[in-house]
Length: 635
Ligand code: ADP
Ligand code: MG
Image (cartoon, rainbow, N blue to C red; front, side, top):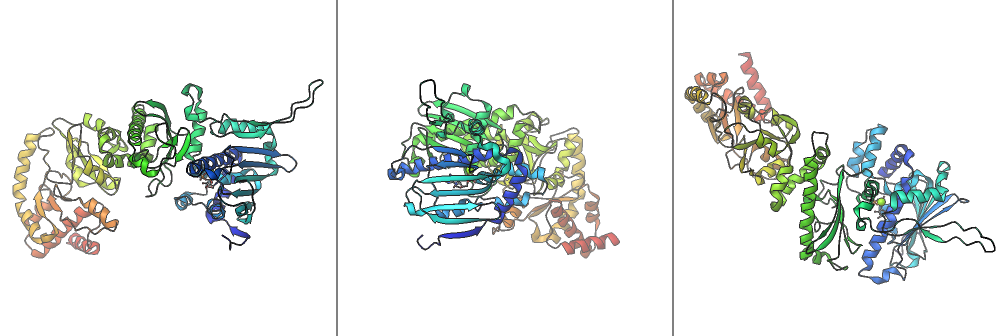
């Protein structure tokens, strides 16, 4: 640190510039949120200090009265927000304010359309945090010193928000962070202390640290002297989750969510419960409206924070809720863990395990309640499913204890409904007479699934089929093999016997048997000319319009799975598919009569490649396929 230059000018990361522009355009009518964001950061900083101090008391530097102090100066036209939290060192200042380190940033900016209204909505999801200071200020000065560092290692950061900032090493006596906002002309209203006080009440009553301001002097009563102004605490300063539900308004709950979830939007729903069994703990959990940007990244943050006796202990980890519920936001507070609990202790603690189990059950209950009240594709549950459905599918794989409950929460597109609203319970209720199996098809896209030739006979017989087109569905179906004692079966796997289902079953069967007989020569020819390309060739009654389709053997991997793994760069052996042909199709009948060896070979290849195309995949030699089809067409 000694050889860092004292004063430097740095350029903002490109994304920061974009964010500042966008923010000023889209949030100008909602400027007051700057105070919420800066207080929220101060509170996080106090939490971090209190946690680090549980193992190193010296960090308090004899000042453990954690608080935020706010001051407006009408002469200078500044607002100062000062905390005695953890503070930042020089590297942290550069990393935290001047760059957006959050994962998913690139993707976020990629989504921006230039359409202000749409983008304003997106910015809500992203969160502007510290940069909201520039909503009201045309110059922002931050001075900070990290707890535990010497006074000479203070840092001063200053920017006018126009693309660059200055950074300088300074001496700072008090640890923590002080932010001075040099107000824009049009932001004068925020110099009034009643305005500041009301914003603090609105957004920060739940902050568990006192937020203090200088009060006004009491005018002198007769014969007495004027009482000097005293410092007053503005907010309630008690942990919100410890207060009784009856005292809390939706607005207070939602504001707390925005603080803890770093979100701009209200949550979809919440759960606030004090549990008193073997272990005592309080849960305040929220379901966000939208997936955070990093939901699908390996290092995705969990969203539930652990408190022990109201002291913040750790950022959310897998110890509190299983990984598949990482989208849930909130706090868990308990008296049953020691304050200086380490990661290792946490993982092995029976108390923690029991609370994790309890919290998981409550979250599933919260989802069940939403699902119960859902009536259509615009319901809250539909929103939740759209955003987090694939996480619940992970739950099927990860959480065997709760598999049955999670299975009921799944929603699918089916041949009867494209909109991903069909539950397995709905499906089972709609099963046709004699149907005892839940049928599904997996494909790369919904369109490919929907148009798959495998569906033909199901359409004819009016049997509903689940259309699965998410990558995770291949894993889902390998773990969810049964629901409500009905087997789940891929319609592209193994032999299919639907002969007992539907009207005219008997008649159809007889007709079909005759067709099978007359198709025998075609089967033989296909086997000979396709050779190793296929494991087998056989007739089927699953097709009504198409001449052929591919299926996998019951215990082989599907073609879809094979493609997914190959795309992911995995070295998987190719699985030989089974070619099934429709004995009643004209092309098959023609093949049965064909004599010329060359023609039979071309014809067989065409049938095979067509079946691959119908799965939404490419034949091995697309140009060859086109040539053969053309030559057939011109004959
Ligand atoms: P977020 O709070 O969502 O992380 P912000 O833009 O609000 O995003 O803040 C960025 C980071 O800057 C914080 O994560 C924190 O590391 C740091 N920071 C901001 N304000 C303070 C503060 N008062 N004390 C210490 N660190 C701070
Ligand atoms: Mg913040």
